Image (tube, rainbow, N blue to C red; front, top):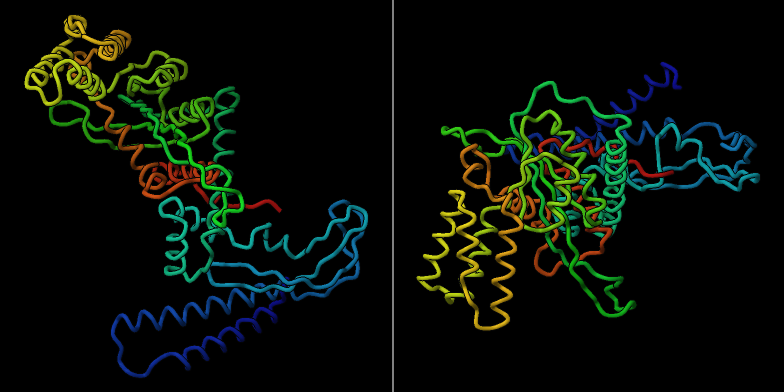
Length: 450
């Protein structure tokens, strides 16, 4: 602890340096607002660096005892001063700390790191928070240049990627822990006091190019890519339009993972729980015809209304129509419109009959007829569009598909991109959290191990 006189001396020294900066850099002539902004920023930046350096030095410039107790309880001997460089929001900070070596547990440590709250990283928590936000939005190289332009913090794209992976993994670990608690119901979160009228849950998958182990210098062989599926979930609420129908989205929270349905299911269930699905008067699950979506819905949200996206159903009709009547056929378009109207008016038997009446001429077309028939027959209970429209439900998964593009494709599926899976998973976790209406406090996940 510094004494009042030491504190006063520090204040006087800082004021002296601040006055010096002002005398050297404060112009006497009139300036434009842009020039004033630049001068004020430069002087303020220098003052911040001075204050940070002096405050750190005040804590680290202390007597160096020859012995210091180690965490193992045994005495450690003074080893000498060791430098450490940290990247902070106010610039690069160079430290000289006393280090001690414990012969009992063979551990070297710097006691002054503890009160400063230093961990194993060369960056501060705030810098890592900036990295998490920028790298969720931008490619690593662009994030590095943006970070330097906005804050004068210079880190390489490789450093940003390593930090992003560590932060994304920390966030995912916390999410999986919360999902475990939710699954075991050992500490359920309190239900919202306000009952929800209707809550939607949407699921879909998007394929992203992932690469095997590879280095740019070719030392690990040629680049080999594959496509990995990222499962995306969205939990959202809507507002009613003038006709009492669900229209615009008012709240949307996301989750996304490449780890497979076994990891995805509890993440989505926990996200729905935190959005109050247990208190919702109606829960609606939207998706296409993929089997894993409805298996997840039945397992995690029993009793929910399940709706197959109307436009996916129309796409199946279009594929069938093209095979039967030919591409861009007027007869085929009329056939599709008739089936779409039957779907919207609750005439599923008529739709199935119209599909079944075709007698294809070859095996490929017979396969299309069979697959189309089974798609509608197996999902008939999820295609009661007349009832859904009457109740004002969304019958299209546009929100779900937009979530895939917004959360994943815009960052992970751009031209020329290929990802290490751990990097893709970290970005998916951070981006889903960041773009949610209720984002978590990422600062809680920015601590690095000692």
